[in-house]
Length: 418
Picture 1 (tube, rainbow, N blue to C red):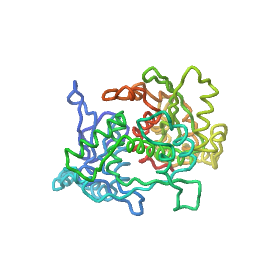
Picture 2: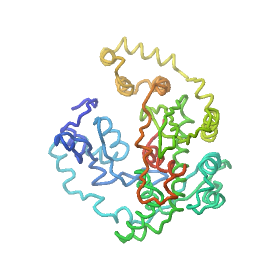
Picture 3: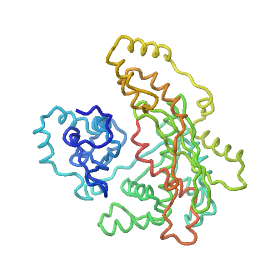
Picture 4: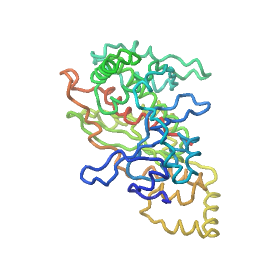
């Protein structure tokens, strides 16, 4: 059995972890690039008792590096019952496990045919008022046809909580919303996305997709930005330290400062997520850019200055002592640690102690967030230019933010910060 630290795909993993190769390298037919989860294909993700949202319908794909612990983490989180049945089976029993199961995604109607359940999201008022309603509002964008009052009307004061500092909004057509997010995540414009959704509805005959316009897509883009920023706010509230990573990118002769946040999660390791893209012009001084970033961070995490400038943790000395004692008294642990060096990856190193020192891991993880990292690449800002008229060539800040946040929407929704 693999130790879980190999990178190239091992054929033994197909049966051991219920995965199947679906993509190979063009010039190297034996080199696997992507595998899919067979539990997702045949049974779908299991509903969690007490969960506020229905389980997602998408199939999980694993890409390089292929690690056994990534498979098991997904199975335990998304397919606990099926994985518990599958794991102890013999080789022959595992081969027959999926033989009588019909893939749940054989038709589009499996996903869209069922009655849709309205999703309700709650976000901080500061996120909506400051970032969505102010920083991402462009009064010169005439194509949207929205006034600020009309745009803000889709956010209402939350009645389900005792905290008046929240807004809530409803996604009444989740299927349409999810498809819009998928199209925006591959850099489609608002107009392209609305066009593609309309053609999909006509081609498939799925009336449940409903009608869609540019204004609807712009509203969805705001929703995604609000949801992601709220997720980031929740993570920051549980992190003792985080780092801000800045990177410059150019889109259609306009420079953008990509602001990314890096923090540590005990469950997923280092989290690197897009926060905000700020257009940079000659008239923008460093002070203006800093004030813009500060304004956005204030809306998401009011204590961000304290989190960046100082840090505190309970039990750090005690946990260090326990680690030293375990190193001295346990030969197996000592051998695992001795096999690591300065080139070992952060997450790989902590797997050697098998989650025995969670507080110390969180402390070290916070420190690791400040290490240099290539946060972004130019291609992420290359929004598709075709099918745009002369008014759509100059992309708006909301359009850019919509695409950027849609790229990481599922990733942020899948994170469980401890």
